[in-house]
Image 1 (cartoon, one colour):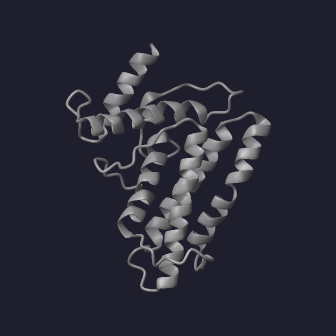
Image 2 (image 1 turned 90 degrees about the vertical axis):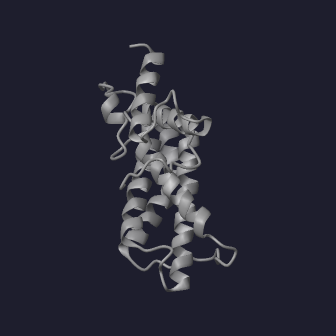
Length: 194
């Protein structure tokens, strides 16, 4: 299969998941579809250690769950949506208030980003960055399910959770950029329960 055929097939899968057709999508929708498709391919390839053999499966790398490009993109879009719709100038950007294991787990994963870059460089293994961005995404989604952000009554805790959300978005963007994976600003057509 040629690379062009692989991209076309992955775009069709990304479009179908969003309930769209690549040929009938608006320019913005097609841009989103293309970024999801290319993230599927790039992340699917780079997430495997470069020194090991693997079988590239389009259906597997195109899923919106598990260690895939679309899952990472959706997590970033979720964090961006929370911030875009609910952040205000009133948030105190000072110390975090960690109140449970989900917040602690996410904060710990965020603290490991610089170490992941060092390890990836030393080992010449981009898969280390894929592992790091997946772990942040997985922990953020667990945090999102278990820790109310916007509806939290305590303003200190709510601000702290918004800070964690902001740091998550920034870390995912930094890691995706290092992997040369572009991300759409929104993924509103996708309704995935990640």
